[in-house]
Image (cartoon, rainbow, N blue to C red; front, side, top):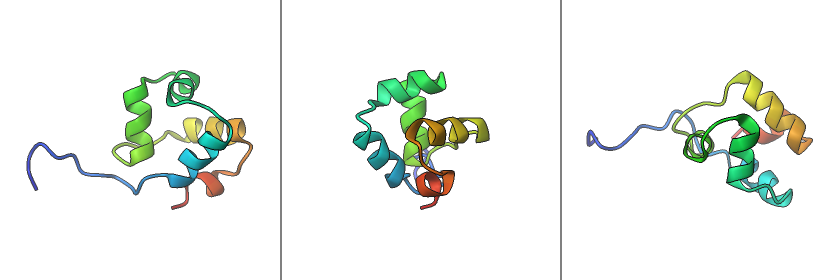
Length: 73
């Protein structure tokens, strides 16, 4: 693997992206809601870093879905 490529920690959270789209929440909105940058949010969704337990709880409450529905891939 090249030094420039980052390794993923987990698969992409497709369900999170789908539920976010259904609620019409933008990536900017989600990032602001969590208090992180848009790039940080996208990295977490795409598997390059992890959501904290507090972030996962906040997202599940915002989207009105269980954490299992959102984060189990």
